[in-house]
Image 1 (tube, rainbow, N blue to C red):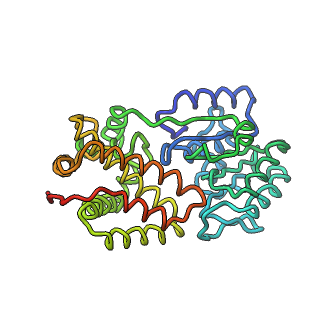
Image 2 (tube, rainbow, N blue to C red):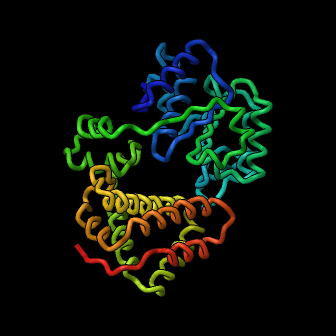
Length: 344
C-alpha cells in the first residue's frame, strides 16, 4: 500500500512502470523538506521487492523488512549516516556526504541482490554530496549495474550537478494545497479545526512536517521561541544581535538543517509582516500571531520589510556556499531594522 498522499500523478507513473517492467535505473525525487520524498522512496523500494500482485502490499517479509530498515538489499544514506564494511550504520555528525560513503555504496552495487529482486540505494540530501562524491555518483549513473535502482532525494535541486539530474528520471513532489491538507489532518489524524488550519499553513503543504508537529510538541515550542527572539532582536542593541549571530554560526557548523528551519521561520515572519502591512492578512502563515504581527508592522515601513526579505533570501543562498557563516549572520543582524516593539 502506497503511503504517499497528494502525489497521484507520480504514483500513477510508478505503478505503470512497475507493471510494464520499465523501471529506470535512477530516480531523482525533488521537493521541499517533509513533502514525502523519503516515504515515496521507501514505498518504491517495497514495490520493487514485493511479491504481491498489487505491490507494495506492506505485509510481506520484504515490505516489513524495508519499512524497519532491515532489508539486506535496501540501503539508506544521508549526512547523519556513515556506512561500515558490514553494511550496518553508525551515527557521525557530518556536513556533507563523503566520497568514502559513495565508494562503499558503489562496491555494494556490484553484487547481485541477496534476498530481494532489486538492490535499492536511497541517498537523502543529495545536494550535500561533496564534489568528489558527486563525481562518483555520476560515474555510477553512467554505468548502472543490472537489478540496481538509485533513488536520489534532494530539497535543493539547484545545487546538484546538471549531469546527475540529466541521468535520472526526475519526479517532483508538489506540496499539498491548503484545504486538502486541513481536511487530511482533521479526518485522518483527528485534529481539531483550528490546529489543523495552523499546521497546514506552517507546513506549507508538507504533510510530513505537520505530522511531526502532531507527534512532537517541541517543534511548535521551538517555533514560538524563535518568534520571541525575532521580536526582541528588532528592539535589541548590536551586542545582543552579534551574540545571536555568533550562536547561529556555531550551530551552523553542527547542524545545517536546524539553521535552515530557523531561517525559514524568519522568512515566514517577515513575509507575514509584508502581507499584514499590505492588508492581505488572510494569506499569512502565523495565524496564531495575527495581533503581534499587526503591532510590529505598524512600526515598520513596507520598504524596510521588503528590503529585509531580500536580505533573508540572499543569506539563504549564501549559507549553502563556502561563505563564513559568522560574517553572514552578522551582516544580516546589521541589516535588521531597529524599532521599539510593543509587546502583545
